[in-house]
Image (cartoon, rainbow, N blue to C red; front, top):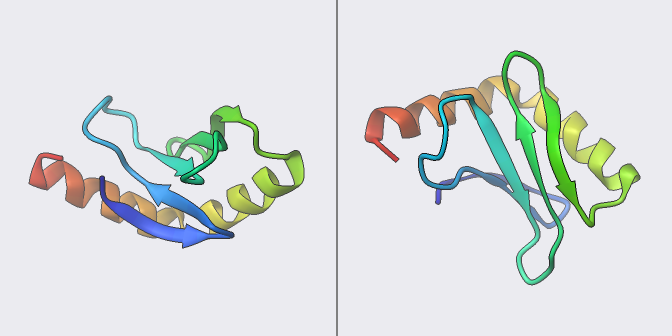
Length: 82
């Protein structure tokens, strides 16, 4: 489970190979708060659970600002077969 970065106490990264479309999971461990965010073609929320709209907007803005970094790490995981 590669972690790409932490933001506002949320882990942003990737779980095992689950699908081909680039995305990240946003998880606050020890709670039920989570989100799945597509990285391509645009950064957009796929699903959200128990995260406030205000917090989700901050997280999405951070992911957008780090989209290239996330895609690079995503592709690195693909090459390594994770």
